[in-house]
Length: 180
Image (cartoon, rainbow, N blue to C red; front, side, top):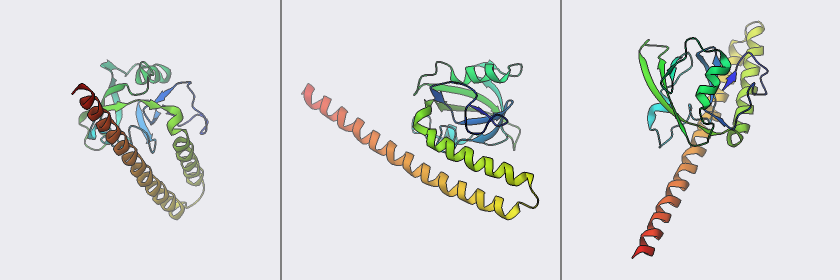
């Protein structure tokens, strides 16, 4: 979890895992391309895709977060800080205002460090352009670039999940043969 108002190229917190969110307070400011909140993950289904920019986090792991500071929220999101563990959140949808439950799988921060750096780089460019005059066309190009890169990252993730699934099926089949 990164605070958008901190230095763009380093996390404020030292952790082994991430859920791939950039927050401003309790609000989702951005979603890390290639991270759990962004990509379809077969272990939690479509839930991780439901989280959007602007959504407000209400509860994490059954705990109301309204009175938490950034560090406390970060700690609750990381939980055990073990890659592969899950975290369930109750969030208020930024469009409908409805509450929804989202379950994300924590991933090893180092596995998506390059994705995060590129994502932060693009966001830094976007923030700098926003500060200047008439950034419209450049912002549209940056948005298209991020969208294109996101699709590439999703393809890589699906590819990796397919390989993992195939290996797991092969392992199960070998165990079955050994037991015969």
